[in-house]
Length: 115
Length: 115
DNA sequence: CTTTATATATAGATTATCTATATATAATTA
DNA sequence: TAATTATATATAGATAATCTATATATAAAG
Image 1: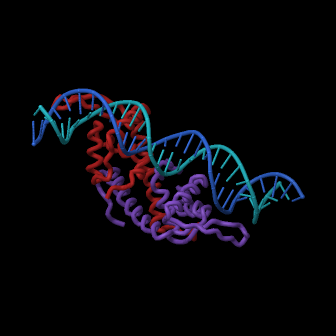
Image 2: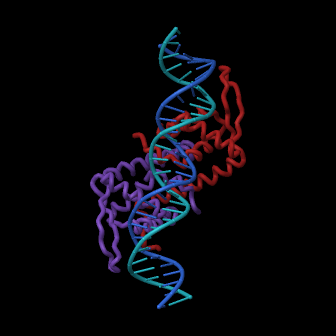
């Protein structure tokens, strides 16, 4: 079932940084990986992702370099910087605080501390 | 730690509807209840809440009526309609799908292996 | 009597994401 | 061989949700 996309606001950057924590990736690969890992709950459009990547690079959270694939196709890989790693850590903590708070309201005051 | 407010986008309506599922409330009360239940993670501004309430009423998800408090102060109470209850149910399911998907990415849960 | 808390309201700004469109090459299918 | 689909990146303009700032009014507290 497709979810209201506005839910993603504020989380997209965190998800992208998280992917890059595991390994360097190119844009198209991120779209596919996110779709797979989320069971297609996240189907980021190219027009959404690329501007975000440009913004992350401008803020020095990621660095990019070009590299040819086996088929000679040129891809633009992104690498997480130290600064990006630090932000990711913060953002993951924010997500925990936020999702616990939502669950507190939706579950009638009970909060989840367990992992 | 104050969280990035953009995370709330798309969830605010769900939280408000959830409060009204328990009992009728007036705006100011919702702001305080949300702050309390979320340990002040949610500190909705009046200028954020009231326009949302007007929108919910327009969509017939809530109904309003005025009532005087003990101190003669006039309050505008909101009541969840049948339509609102149905939407709430949907929104709660959406939240579950969404938060599970985020956790899948952030906790490195699902792998390619299964796909 | 002055400030703070309670209570509601609206206009305008901000910002993240979406839609639509554009380009180009590789791989597949007709 | 030609046409189509998948891969890959990019940008302009639109949309929508929330925030900031401002306004009004009364009750309670200092």
